Amino acid sequence: MDYLFVFIGLTLLVIGGEFLVRSSVALSFKLNLSKMVIGLTVVSFATSAPELLVSLQAALNGFSDISLGNVIGSNIANIGLVLGITAIISPLAIDKDFYKLNWPVMMILSIGLYFILKSGDIISRSEGVALLLMLVVYLWILIRKARKDRGVVQVDEEVDESLATTSNFKIILWLVIGGVALYCGSELLVNGAVSLAQSFGVTERVIAVTMIAVGTSIPELAASVIAALKKEKALSLGNLIGSNIFNIASVLGITAIIQPIAVMSEEVLTNDIFWMIGFAGILLPLAFLPKAYELGRKRGILLLSAYAVFIALTILK
Image (tube, rainbow, N blue to C red):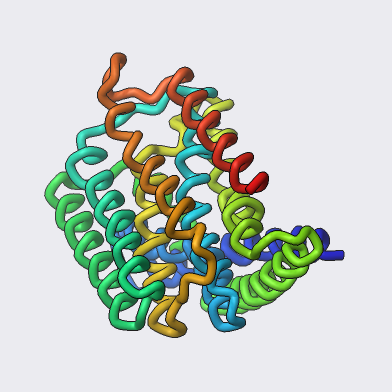
């Protein structure tokens, strides 16, 4: 039954996330926001909603390890699993924004999260505010840069222009469906995950950094694999790094403001977060090794193998 709860929970999160993205984009068009701003802010926030609801639900129910494990595990899965598989299928091009802006911000937030957790074994409300402010600064730089460069192609492709003509009734209906699906999905997923952890005799943290993290990364994995198989432009490195930035800054930031997140398992600080920092850090040398500015099959195999090692060690421990 617990497996069913987890499966239904993940399904509802995917459905709820999709409806929330569509309604948010449609509403943004009604408010006369530009496609660029919608792509950089509204879409990014909406696609982080499943992770946010899971982390918030877990923190409110006293399962802080699920809140942290969900974000840390998702960030590891985004690079090791999603990026690894995508690079194996179709090489990914690396642009200058990767090492000039996105990668440094991801590393600052990843290392910053370690020091925040180590300083008091908790993410307090004030630290949650600080994380959100960092996200605001990052988005301001992104929007300013995009305006200067005049149009970001990948952002424009993310935003469906047909949603501009959506009726008010549909927007409200989609918002309601998305909100209800996300709430119910997060409830079922957290409860199912806790029961599974108890039945297997493992901690909630183990379930969170493996099963829940992979589950919340499935939409990105599916989108990138389909694009790669069709020989279309696969999920960009920038999008994945942006997702990791949002996971730390918005998901943990907002959750901590509502309910401070305590470190319940020592392994979060002695193991998991170092894997997250390691996966983030290895991207820079991989980007500049010959052939430079491209993540090809061999590097994809390396990332996927490292992810398999992480999962194996986490479960065996």
